[in-house]
Length: 435
Ligand code: GLY
Ligand code: MN
Ligand code: MN
Image 1 (cartoon, rainbow, N blue to C red):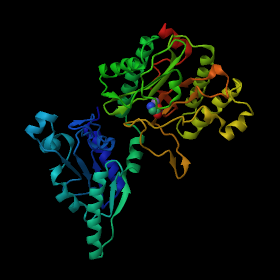
Image 2: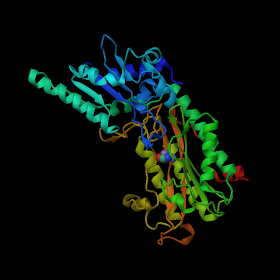
Image 3: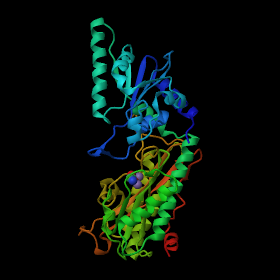
Image 4: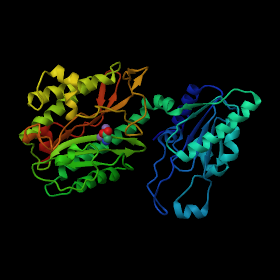
């Protein structure tokens, strides 16, 4: 759990980066209609969750550094017995003040009357645009009105600044409490992958493995998957974001599962690839071992001070060499790397930040240079090789095989820690677990 004190410290850190005479406006995520009066499950904006943990829709938080009457204002829905009977409990203004560290709470319906006044003398508005078009245009309108009045009065204008950039910097380095939650998300997800390996059987459907995975998530206290689970058997594994999950598992095929849970707002992201019948064939084993070696080489680069690109280059180098050794590519390894020849078989990046979002916030480059790792960052390492079933350029035995191996890594002071190593990835360990 994230404590009230940690939320307050996050807001304080953000406000010290914003500087005086500025305001941050952080809106809740909009609700999404599935049909008529049925909604998709609600997912709060992770920026808002990060700053106060409030989980309800129709809320806007406002931060005003150095405002004497209070720096943290929340607009939210007030109590409403009838709506709560239909839609669920609401925190209400009073409770929000008592539990969230809010200094002033107002009904969301009053935002029109109050927020423009708060914008009036500010020179910078921090805001994360593009996530809720309706709220974007309301805020633009209020800021425009303030700007127009100022021109008349001859005062300076008001600048929009991207809030994601500042919050990205804060969210990139995980606190001890965040690491604890991420460890838990990683452990649950690792157990779920083990469960899928144990329950896998020829003739089952991909969605039945998905059910095994997601059963473990929910039974262990996770809120559910952090992203739509990918269960791709046979050549479906070559579709990077395959989510149909409806094919029958065939003996002799591999199955690729990319799934991770969300636990108290923090995500895990694991991929394992294993044989449906519990035994790797020789061509599957050959490709698998290259991906595993690439993943290990990439992970081994990680330490504070090392750049993001070094993991990528390590993976590319092992994959290219491996594909040459198997005569899937031909030519000099250095030339093939320079030409990007591996991209026909490995077409995504090796890594992304991980946190409250599966593809978490945070810049990958700073001043156009690859960002240097720091202790407390969490990232994935996930190389793969995917040989399309239609690729007539390669020997038939390779066609329709897709392999990805993905773990979640915490950068530590001395190097790294693999958060997801409770799920096996050596071939003999997988075969043993499945036997
Ligand atoms: N699960 C999406 C990814 O691995 O990036
Ligand atoms: Mn990933
Ligand atoms: Mn993944």
